[in-house]
Length: 471
Image (tube, rainbow, N blue to C red; front, side, top):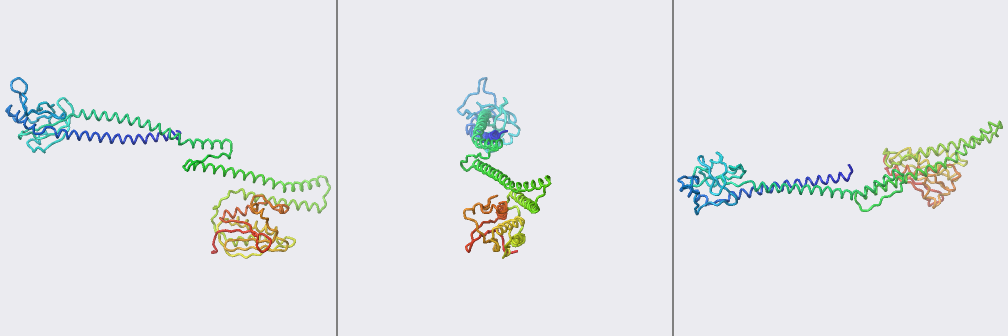
């Protein structure tokens, strides 16, 4: 079932419950009110005239009851004390020997239990439901008869007017409830349709993206409600996906470009060696050795490049590792790995260190690789015979060389993938080392940046990581 239909049904059900509860309460309240008014009307009907009529008729007919045959064959004569019923209240005399209505009243059926108030005080009353001799339902008040008679008076009023009123009220409430429920369902459907119109637009946009893979689609955002937040989330998601796809495409393009050079050199060397073997003309020994050495160098560069690409293809997660890492020990291991490369230069480059204890959280291998990349760059650009200074104080690891330095206009690009300074393109490297170092720093909650020293030429690479000096 569509969402708008479910919302319309829920609105209708909620209104139905509310109207049903109000209707039931109204019906019960009106019924109780009408029954209370009936009881008050029955209790207030009659008065002193009842006793006088009862006495006159009893004396006239030589009996202590208003019952008896009228004198002669004519109707009972009227008297000044004739009882006139008020508000449709009828009064019937009931005793063990006689039952008859007072003049102008409808006779109701008495019960033996009614006689328990006979001869009692006027305040001794019994309330009950009963029927007339014709079978009509009535409300009855049983009171003692005057003159200490052995009978009682049954004051009654029919239920028919109240039943008719309640029946009319019930039909009216049913009709109003049905109209209210139908109106609520219609209004709920219209409101749901209007409220869900932005959702329909968002759904169409998502379906368009899924169908065409067009991540440039953006939803208009207005207001600050849930729909606006959903639109903002959709825009953020498509922007992130587009950036990720663009970055992936750029990585593939740059990787293809970087792989093309060593592969071309390697293929050229292998083709020359194969052609020499097929033609039977041996290459000069120096040339053959040069080709083999170049092929091995290109294979080494390919291995490093592929490892760097695999590292960068891993999803970046800032809190994936929470193990404590001794940064000073990581720096010592990185220095030991890079020191032979500095010593292998024609004029050796030395590495001096001053490392104070510092414990941080992160991936030990990734941090070591980041430090190695910083040291590699420093050794690569350090002048022959100079030294590279490594310092670790209060979580700040600095690598200082005395090379030509980085021009200010190139500083914003040093951490981009495959970016290489025009002065360094002739040197070995893939342009991924600093990008990997910056990634490792972010994953450990730190930062990395370059700065120019104030006491001479060169560059200072600073890696700052949160942590503590305690073990």
